[in-house]
Amino acid sequence: MNESTKVQARHPYVPEGLLGLMVPYGNFAVEWEMSILMGYPNFALTTRLMSDEGADLTGRLRSYFDPARLSDAMRSFGSTPLGCVGVACSSTSYFIGREREQKIFATLEREFGTRFVWSTEAVRQALTSLGSRSMCLVSPYPHEITKRCAEYWVSLGFEVDEVIQIDSFSGGFHPIYTLTPAIVQTHLEAAVRRSRSPVVITGTGLSTLPAVIRVLRAQDRNGPPVLSANLCLAWSMLAVAADERFRAENWFTADASWLEAAIKHPRMQEFVDA
Image (tube, rainbow, N blue to C red; front, side, top):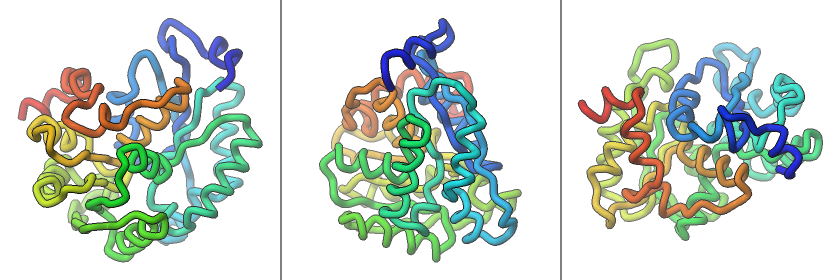
């Protein structure tokens, strides 16, 4: 982001400027968690990624990264100066692949003059910053999408040591969005006990932050880093907007710089005190 954009975006509410978020419709976890991870002095404005595919899950996931739909979503921000735009959708990447997603977002960056960060790119950056080429994968997706997810990471040169499957039995309006933090925590604790590699929780619509906080607070400094899709996206967006590199060791471990403030956040109280 250039200096003139920073000046235009400054306001007492958001002294470090505005960020943009693109979120699939119905996904409430992203905004809930980002409001805790990216509060003052930043603020994220949200637009929705829409789809006409209805019950066709594969078609719906592919449509989220349709260039025309992404351009329309970007135009909904109008002339708002944004430090960067985060695209909070993981599973689409597993269908279209790394090469295609890079081309899509490079084109959008040229068209709008704004940096884009998408979920799988943020996870890749975090793993690279941690110096790791392996992971334990925690997935809430149906088995076929989990398989695509693991294959995606292997295609990028990462080793998937183990996959821990969260079966989606919530019975709510969406099989992943309505899974509770308690369910996530049970599987995350199992992953942390068994893995020496970073634990990667995929799915931006999965309610992960309370589970991540409780696991990080409980583990010692020898525990594996814990990376959720939203945690990685927040880390990467803040780094891009500030034009600086945030140490991954200070974001995904028990020494996380955001942890104390998150614990004190009013929305987190019923989870950390439970």
